[in-house]
Length: 244
Image 1 (cartoon, rainbow, N blue to C red):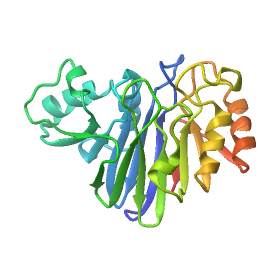
Image 2 (image 1 turned 60 degrees about the horizontal axis):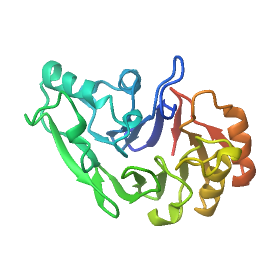
Image 3 (image 1 turned 90 degrees about the horizontal axis):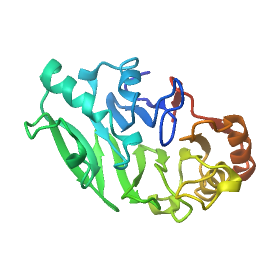
């Protein structure tokens, strides 16, 4: 990919815990020569290194403090502190996540930047606004805007949140599809049908569904999302890259 491109590489798609041989939530974003690791669930650090070297990582963004979205930060700290000798790695995360880490010390390896609802930041050439979702802990959905192209990431959420809080005109919506239609409302997560409806309401051009509970029929999830979205839907696959 040329430095001027904008791409999403899937590092992991399992929700809540990893299925046999699976990896939890994580994505690599590359744009304008800048690299961002979005969510650092268990297993994602190993997959990240299939695409970039750890010393080429520019920033980390974590949506919330459930371990299936952040626990590989522990390994990243060890690598940066003891093997790469890096200081000041930017980590954008909600208030309180740092205190959950068992091994991290205030030695400057990580440059913690607390984010919250309605806050914005520039990560390289991208603008990132965040919006708090409908989830049991503070969880931040994100819009990643590079020029005229925009990725919308739902993170984890129930039906009480909408992409409209991040603005209209998404090129790609990356939306969790944890639940079956029958289980809607049982947890603060979306079904594939709700994911499709949310992306359609946002006017998204394309939809990727992700964050599948172990054992979830992913082809059925795709079909349910597609019926609600009104257009083709793709399933996020580990190791696959999409141009935004």
